[in-house]
Image (cartoon, rainbow over all chains, first blue to last red; front, side, top):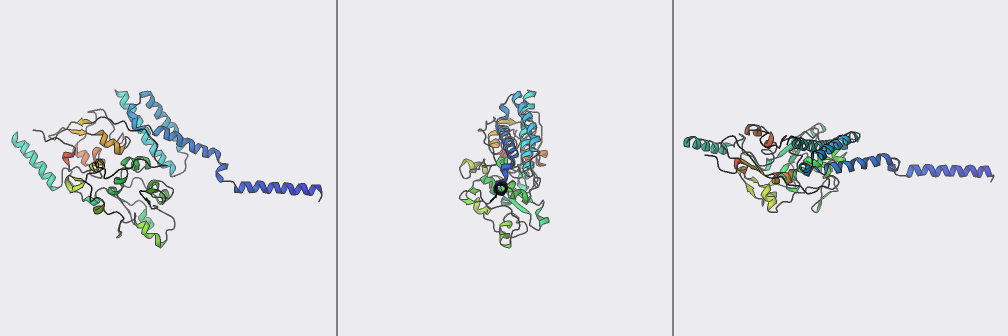
Length: 109
Length: 264
């Protein structure tokens, strides 16, 4: 078999391998960015909203920071798909409202 | 003065006898706390959903459903959809066919293209207007639970204290790991009328509700004396009346809040 033909077959073979890999590979592996950011918002959400039980124990500065973090996270949550978006926004709003409430109470003192 | 007090006490008894301070008839135990959800199901040819609080509150805290899962505190305000349930949210957070309660798998809430055979499963929730035999019946379920006050409703607080129920406050994959709750101190709420002051127990309320169920939506202030509300507003479903008279013990049970005798 001539060298050129063998080379062409080799290229086709490699191309087939490449296409097969694309088709077989899990869909998630192409969305590393979004998968990471999904994980990322959840981590931040858990971090912020896990502290609500002790909202009245925080200082004014800590509460202000928590409210700001809620506001920053809101814009990221708004980009999620439904119904995750709707449910998480509600939960986040509850956290924010509680911290804002505690902040107001502390500031009035 | 003595005559006036006698008149007031007599009036109070009459009110309690004919239906209570809220002016509503005494609750029917198995219907108390029932919510009929009819946002979308009837348009889809299914019956409305009958949700019984008595069953769910025996197993889960208020906070778990109204904070972690995200159910609104008002009937039909959540706008629950079959699609949302199927994706594992709202009812589907537990009712997904895989989550285990006790030794049993919790049945899946909704599914696409349910066959005739599956109609029985749909009817477990979409039961309004149908004769459905429920897995849990109120009478047998609450048979051994302590009761208190008017209407002989279950005393859930006592039921928990005596170990009859252990409401779960954490749902894996849904709830957030949190440090233990710092219990706020109990405090008294002065009564403007002739009824005695209320000793409000933060401990009792916060353990089941967490903080965000009540603050700031229901009680927008914690500074003593800032927020003034009356029994009229409470009977109208505001403040304490958001839960009491709907799910928590009814307002007819005056002495459960106004624990001390009437002022003389």
